[in-house]
Length: 375
Ligand SMILES: *[C@@H]1O[C@H](CO)[C@@H](O)[C@H](O)[C@H]1NC(C)=O
Ligand SMILES: *[C@@H]1O[C@H](CO)[C@@H](O)[C@H](O)[C@H]1NC(C)=O
Image 1 (tube, rainbow, N blue to C red):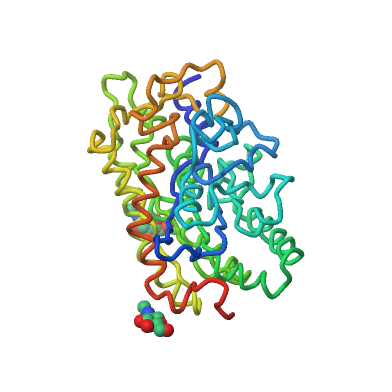
Image 2 (tube, rainbow, N blue to C red):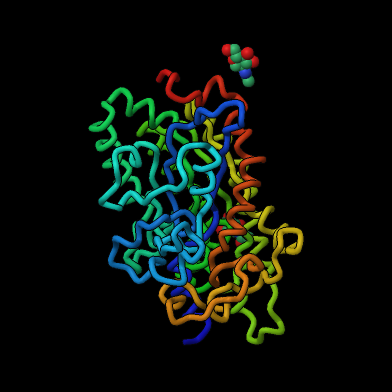
């Protein structure tokens, strides 16, 4: 397979990224009660905790060596060797130790009401992203959320369900697949848009999703920006033929920075249009860039390839039980050719806890004071 078509397949997949996430923490030693009763997650493989397991798609992470470092060493469908940001945040927030996928048919009532992920690896804000891969596009994730609300109403009643949704922390993480798939590797959207136009198109879509979630009762949302896409091992592989030349693709990183800048500017405007909402930008670019530029500070030795296989291309079905893995995954920023390792996700979570959670809480009297909040 030529690198480019390989890349395309992988990007469909995953979406990878990190965008992921957010933050939240909130439970200082002195205040053990969770600030948020639940976490609700929408997005791509950076925050898909196993929904793709239940779909007819190739894009799954429910086989070894995925999950190697997850509690119990089980592959769960998470596209990493262990936990993802929503899991770390749920734990930091004193909610629970991990966020289950909504499509898991065996969820307990308690696990449902404390939050689930609707995310699907390979998806994006643009509904054409990943659609050939059989994943759950954003629009359908919202349909699943509507079903979720009905189930929660059945468990706690309509009034409590409304309170729960309005005080839940919503995390949205997507966008990398839209660029990776539709612009860089198989430029289907390039015929319609230049980069700037496509960024605006995606952010208009995002705006509509935020409004839909607001209409459904959500009030507190953290929206992840793009990571340095040009530093993803798979993107580097598509661009540079020899391993000697491997380096981040500056143009792609610049596009991501511009997208992030626009996003950080537009979210406060959206917030101001939606009364009593808190809609915050979550930067993942800077912390990842810092890990790439100062790896040793974080214990990383390798930042240009994943731990699985050669680290240049393997991801999803190509990172499997027959693929050798690196000796010490703690030294790797990337687990596979697209997704960060658990160690990187943990550093990101700590960053978000410090930088983003406070913004979600800083007018705490208004937005999320948990169950006692009216409305
Ligand atoms: C991108 O396209 C829009 C119209 O769709 C145009 O206004 C803008 O100047 C273009 N930007 C660049 C950098 O070509
Ligand atoms: C929140 O309200 C409490 C009193 O109810 C007040 O003491 C506190 O300063 C308020 N905090 C903010 C950030 O407005």
